[in-house]
Length: 265
Image 1: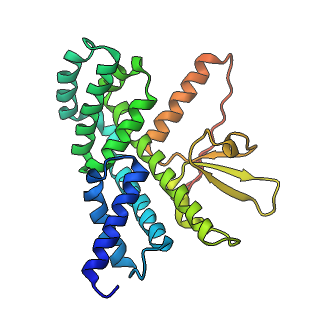
Image 2: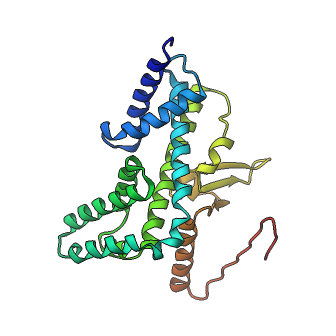
């Protein structure tokens, strides 16, 4: 491309279509995030054609942007209980929430979460997708609990961000693999976007495979599974599972081993 402005415009339009399909949001709603990512892509790599390599770069940047938002929101999980604006909005919402039927409750909570998350992060585009993921996963009887517990609410949003960044990273790796048939896909740049890993203990050296969710067959059926707890949301989810195990299992045994720069057992 000879014209730099035309190049940016084309990349932004391509980015907008990819975000539209990837995040399942209206095309117009994808425009702000697409403009930012498209400009970053053009600044890092001079496109020579609208080919698959540019699509890969766009998706890499999208995964990175989601990861940045995840890391920004994550510290707010333990601080959420003291955020007065959350309580103010919650009180206003819960006064009317349980007077509605199930469908209306979900619509009300969706609007509340989208506005809250958009204000919290400044990412109105991502908030639409994350809120839809959260509301679809939470049972109807748990919506009230979620709204009345700010820590759990913010943690759920972080969980959604983690799941979304893993999805985008997986699709990016698959696209790279399709472009480099017969060659090994470089995994290291993408491993930080995943929380679930399986280790192939039968191979030498061991092979570590990332997984989008814990429901992935490769992860669920693996003899050696690793869950990375790199967010407060992940830690909270893990502790909740331990509590469920304690309640539902007679005399459970749990072994904990903390290792890091300063070894502590």
